[in-house]
Length: 346
Image (cartoon, rainbow, N blue to C red; front, side, top):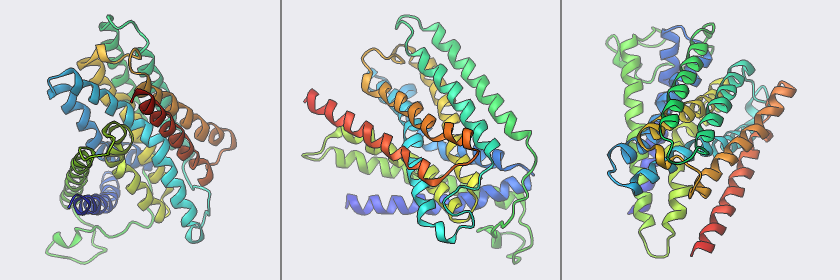
């Protein structure tokens, strides 16, 4: 029964992602926004909501140190999954679809958009992780860092909003198009109201599906012979990162590589600033490397994977699918570290 629910929740997330990618493109078109604003801001924020709710609920309403620790782990796990597994899946999707792509295995991206995201991510995440090295008793500097992170994210968003509007070539019909104007056929442009309804409905599917996915995984973790810690650290976060990953695969399939990568890199900036600020404000004493070696070790992997993938992109002025596969190598390395640590602890 649990496996059936797992499949159903995955299908709901997939359907929501398809509706979301279609709807958010139309939303950006109606507002005359550029690809950076659509992929790295609107799509990134929308699909980052499921994993953002985990630390908010755990830290803000958990009522215990254990719950807050889970929240801190979720904050660190989100950028890690995006920088490793999501990159790997996107790269694999490009390779699998290379014969139907005009750019082949090279991603046809706006280097300015992706570079903008990764520059802000490196800055925000480095500052956030640096705060974890402060003495545990110093809480006010951590709260000050939270304010700085919010400012950095604000400038990141502002930079994308100032960019020129995208041409939106190959815009597919809105899926909810027939709900507008008495079912008028495409290409009659849909109203912003109908576009917004589709986006909200899609987000509801994504959030609901991700929540159900996580609940099933928790049930599986409680079963005999299952290592709950391993599931919590490495498998459960996959569910909350499914929206970004699936969105990127769908956009890669449509040849919209800037939106595909922007959805991931924009979400990385969001996760490095917003949920991190929540942790720094509500649980400053837990944002420390003391006693959190394995969890904060994922931050080093995140920065390492990001550098390995995107520094060569800046130097070569191109991004290939094989470079994204490096994310899987870093994920596998961390998996081995966690398994060894759990084995020693047991």
